[in-house]
Length: 354
Image (cartoon, rainbow, N blue to C red):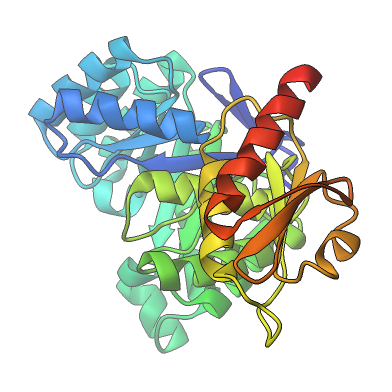
């Protein structure tokens, strides 16, 4: 992880701080009520930083109203118009995201940097493989990891040369391999915090796979201080999956761990449906202790033994199944009651623990 750090409304990024989770509102930039409602949803899912698009003056005014409504760290996403960046800073942005290359000439970038410096807020310098500078594309004969890294470092240097060091860098591609290679190059050449992600990763199904591999590989390599999973889906899904990635890598304590066996010829219940229901209900269950381990097994003979390390679990039989705790069977119930009885046992026991 990066040696340097920035602070976004009290949240530290880099410098050994835990990897933080970000997302972006997809409500219309003028929809004050909708934006506030979505921020509350994102916060409830575990989001720690929210980015808002600021495409025009009215959006900047809405941004100011949202800032007064929430304590969530807010990032203003700016393209092309340097005046909107300044307006967002004046509206209370905790960080701004710009690409110096599309803001305009040096004088305009300097005005943005001056406004950020007056309030000591970080600037995220973001570049994208889909909008590399023409000279870099010519130099490398196309869009490459080396070109993406060079663009990121070049744009970072524009602001560094102005004497401002309160920076985060991001460079994103939808190509997982290119994204990985470019980040490794940049990580070796800067100590600024790095925002990681796979841009335009795709739908919920495909995007999760690309994000898990792309972001997970970088975090395992020690690259990345804050992250966003970019999905064509509800932003809440981005946050939930980002947390899953961090939990899987051991970078966050899991709220729960669900283990379930693959189906086989012995399975006599709808194991897939049962596992999905248990997972969904656990993901929305408040107040459970961190690290709770739940097992959903298909075989009533081997299930409790194979999942003896689980705190609670179910194992199916022929139209019925057992509920067990720490490997010990405590009741037998019909298949349609398995999920409800499991959660009844969890509530009864965990209430005494809390």
